[in-house]
Length: 311
Image 1 (cartoon, rainbow, N blue to C red):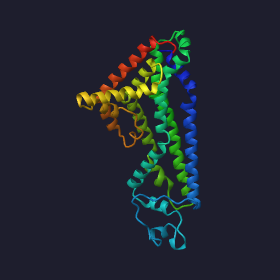
Image 2 (image 1 turned 90 degrees about the vertical axis):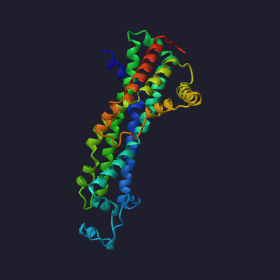
Image 3 (image 1 turned 120 degrees about the vertical axis):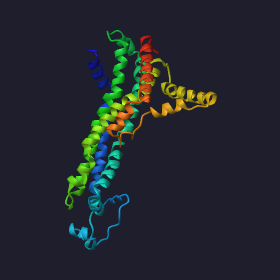
Image 4 (image 1 turned 180 degrees about the horizontal axis):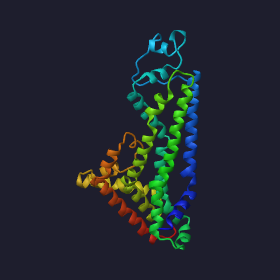
């Protein structure tokens, strides 16, 4: 186990492009879009968004006049004033959806990177014959497979989570730029309803829970990567589809398809998750089944790698 930190570091440096540079570039581009959108709305070049279920505020609304914005002389940033005047719970719900929207710039990418990383990690080392070098080192097959599993389950998601945090901070910074010069309290209007600290803590919990919830998928990708000799993508999708079809035809059931559907990647499950909901998902027979099935598939990957050779 003392070799594990070194091997994880090796995986990180070997896949630094998709582990670090890809989310960094996406974050920078998304932040630039948010900032330019805020500046464009502030300058009047871009139309302001429509507040969901917003009541239309009249130009002579007393509240707007009290804020120093008289619609009869030209109303500025009506949406911002409507948002600031709305109830706290409503602002919180809107910002939750907006934070989810910006995180979707990274979450699907994270799942795609995880999918293809696990699918190719054991296949490519046989294809390029680097497995001959790694097998010459005093590193067990179990530690090697465990390293790749830990990188997909924890290292990669937490790196992407850091960039999601940065992007959500960029969202609030763009909101701050948009609200500059307007008679609104940024702290009470945006920061407090956004609940970023709570959101980040729950997303950390979600990553930990999802790591074990999706273990059957992780294990299946590793198992296919350890034994297939060509077209791993076709194998990883084809065999489950065939199994679902056979179950439907001969048993008229859908247990397999339901299990696969429940334990696949999900880009939006983190939103709205509470600590109690996370604990409720952990302490279930379904989670136990996921850990058992996923663990067996990981053992298959370890066993196959012990007999693997170059392709």
